[in-house]
Length: 414
Image (tube, rainbow, N blue to C red; front, side):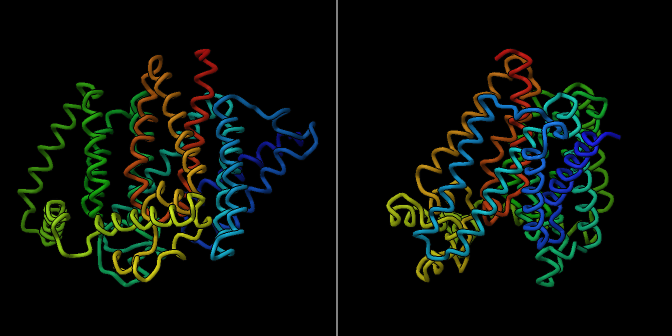
């Protein structure tokens, strides 16, 4: 094996470990270590002598250049915001995360340079998704959880799936984004007959989690999917509905089923009284957190209070309105409040720019719909996790989307 092949294998192995760590942060303390490993990976990609390099030159196109420049600007601005932030340590910590986002994005977009590699990454997402389903079924049937989940740490007795994450909302958010990739990836293979089964699994998981925002977002996805379903999928869906009704009628007195039924009804009914309830509901908390973010934005003269300083600027008065919750629970509002108007608008522009490119490709390749849905579902997914900076996995998916656009633009001459 030549040195070039060894370095090639080394790069892809490093990337695989990084992606697995992002999607399975079972030992959360390893995340900073893996971020540093990405830096080493970038070093090998760019610095090692030309005869050893996997690529002879860095690939640049419009979509990559736009994303690179915006992410580089964000990284620099984040570091500079430490000059006026309350907590410099938090700013440096979040700046490290942003630089990690940039490096992860850069490496994935550079390494995925063929359609075969793109398909291989889609297969990796499928393996991750199957692992998520297995963990979810285990949690729902045994009331057991992985050691990093909040349920274990707080000693909660629940069968709500937390997956390999601390919070079940974090798990729901990534399921929302990876699910369209899997469904529309399966449409091109014989595995499409499993699509109705996977949708049923997702419905069950979200209802047991009590993730109302995820339930509404999944409902939107199911409606869109109906228009693209084949006759076989429709037949399987009908059979699954009949089987579900039969099993419900047969096991309706089962204690576990009764518990699940009560939880489901409670979550559906709770949507009706969110507005007029006197309690500090999750929706009201998000509302006041959003208002707090706007206050921070204007107090900082639209420059942001400093990267990573959202929690530090949650005053006692603000916390009294959110039942003590200090995390933003909204990606855009957190970036607006901490990094200011310019960074928020640039990232919003990048989101729209990528979406426009996907819509152009969709005219020639209907498979792009799955990625379009990922971006659309990012909107509800972005208000599920507590903070944007605990959302490492999104950058792997976003890099995958940009790689898809680059390859399709090259293929279609767009």
